[in-house]
Length: 117
Image 1 (spheres, rainbow, N blue to C red):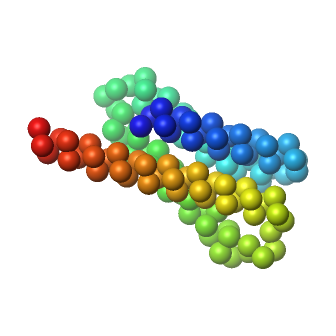
Image 2 (image 1 turned 135 degrees about the vertical axis):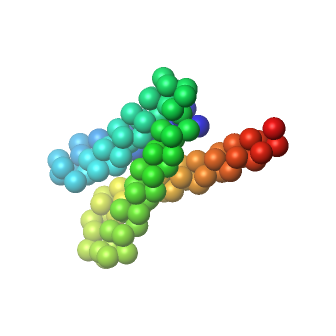
């Protein structure tokens, strides 16, 4: 799961940096900040095998927060957003939500495998 998290982290960083390059707005970097946090956690999980479970659970919380923030922004002010802001928020919501779903599925599979052994 850490390798998958690294891929999603890179996509979030690309989304944020691309939006920032287009608008020069510091808020456009929010997906990049979430991506950096996820990338750091995934890198640590790869480096420290004993702490992998805990680090990936923290990464799941970051992915959850990364899903909730743009969802709340879209619910509150989607009509007032520029097309770019709307796209960035939808992109961040989608990437974080898909990552969270993949993580939950991996956690459930690991739990079942542990109980079977």
